[in-house]
Length: 413
Image (tube, rainbow, N blue to C red; front, side, top):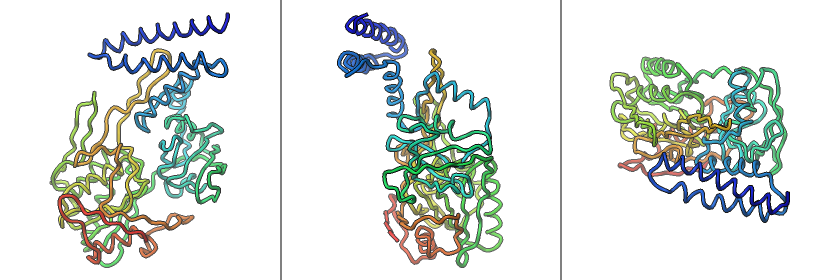
């Protein structure tokens, strides 16, 4: 068959396919927006088939286009080809318990590390929030979905996965450093609770897994009995856990108002409200965030920072959160592929979409210090720029933001 005939056959097949798809789409919608969107897609495919330097694999081209289409929506939405979906289901059925202890997402077209659990295999291997995973298990992450990355990172405890990391700590610039990470079963770490200067209490929440709100309640009640009257709630790098735990934790602090709202085109809006009877902490407090605060952690930060505190506006100190708070739905397709589609987004009490904007601190502090090799407890606040600023504000030596819209302060230490 000549190239011209094959081109005509493929083009005709595409037209027929898209015509059938169009009929289905128009049956679900009341306008022709989908038709207009498909027109350039057909033209691009025809041009690739006719004019590309060599005969392309249309199946590969189409799969790549679908991956890009979903990634253009948001970092959490993804297209799984029939092969990828089969591997995804297989991994779910296997139920492998070996993990590396890192939360990942997509940025800059690659898979990136959002946060790392302390004392986890990923932490011991040198991974930190913000690192780019250029490759996982030998596969480039350039066109890899988050769900695919998660499948590759889990496995049997004791087995290793090789990742290529681009990180300033390795001193390699744009060159990746290959690192072997040995998977193991991950136990979610307990919260860290301590007394700092004077009457200031400190709680660090590394993850909001099931039961964490009860643990936090107990610590707050203990601090209250001990006479603590100020609190630093550290949510830096808190990216794992459940939204339900974030809501229950927020209810320990917030006496009234909306904590967060879940909204989606096909999902009935759900508002999570404060419950006055559940409030435990009635003293001043501040919240610490970082770029590694995500998901449940940033929902909690937004709920606390978006509601009136006992002594006025609650300050959020640190960096803008990553922005992942959303709900996904797995939608199998007839050809064996699947969509992992974001169907609802969490909003701040002010109505801002967390997935798009993250949670912006009221007092921005960029800590330029290099991370230590070991997880550090806040024994030396002077070495922690964010914690130092929090103590200054709580002790009254630094100005607090006032007014309806909090005044933004920036401290680079």
